[in-house]
Length: 443
Ligand code: ATP
Ligand code: MG
Image 1 (cartoon, rainbow, N blue to C red):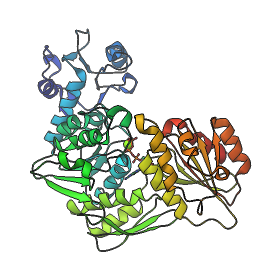
Image 2: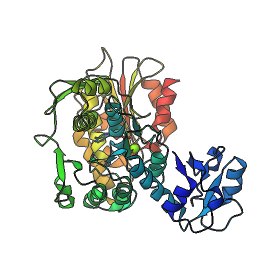
Image 3: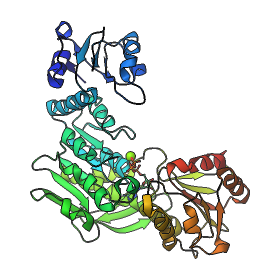
Image 4: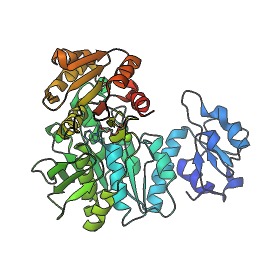
């Protein structure tokens, strides 16, 4: 970032006398005082503790100035609300640099789609993206203010905890292209209904530039939230854009689309990733990336850690680890993917399913509904873990399923039963800690 203190003070409407530093150029802003380096601007935010408590540390680390909501001894820009100032600054910086924004929201697939779009656009443009999961009212401005100076396009992930969150993020970012990957069931606990989730996610239209394009799933639930005067592209079977001829291999997927000439292959499993990749390919065509370059980028794409990934157990067994998060849509899709893969010679197909959290009142029936996606002609045994999985337990044949209330016991059971030829799928919410089983099996 390259902004003078004068410019920053003007944009955020600083009310004090900051003029002695006016012409100084600021290159970096941090809200974690430990990350401050010489010449940086500090941003005290209110979290578990009040960031103002760390202003001294920030200056000890070399901060040149700080934002502040109260009088402080050090050089500062006095504002009413530091977070709001940060957001205003990010919005201004995007406008000033004229970097074009591609925004991605949705119940699942945000990070993956964002990573894939970034890969595709990087073939033609200097492209930056949300690092990891920095997708909220703090993380998104942070991403914007940390993009390299030569950035031409930025792909921003937008996450939500409350209605209105995506609205705000979209108004800051003013995307040229806005994508909703999925209206799923995650967050049902806080939103009550899928309809409310749809309303929240469609907040992404709030800041869409005129002449921009909104890309949404063909899901009736969003219809009433679609803007009238905007180019809307729907994806899904027989819609504006869609995946055809999807072929799943163990470590990769191939598919064609209705808008590119040739087949795309991506080095990641999971049916849903074909949709994510198709969306990335479509954004590439919208922004004039050559088809060959799109295919090339997607054939090399790598995902943010812990998303759907094949790993090897120490005894040689194959592990399909999808332990980052879980909701009914994704759980059913990964089961389809796993069941479609041929068994290894003499090996079994085993699956560990753990609770899907944050589903609210509908959690029992949503867990039970997974039974319909399990095909015991293609699966030998299912291990269930967690209180909510008792609802699925009741739906499955007794001799094909084992229930565990305890992670250590489940880990021990798997360690003793897993044979080198076996294939094991693990899926559950992040806080169910299935990742620790994967690690144990690899050691
Ligand atoms: P978060 O809300 O934590 O930021 P996210 O929306 O960024 O999640 P990803 O990190 O891309 O989502 O993917 C998380 C998991 O969601 C994947 O491991 C996979 O199981 C599932 N998933 C990914 N893409 C899709 C999709 N298009 N539809 C349904 N499920 C998906
Ligand atoms: Mg994410």
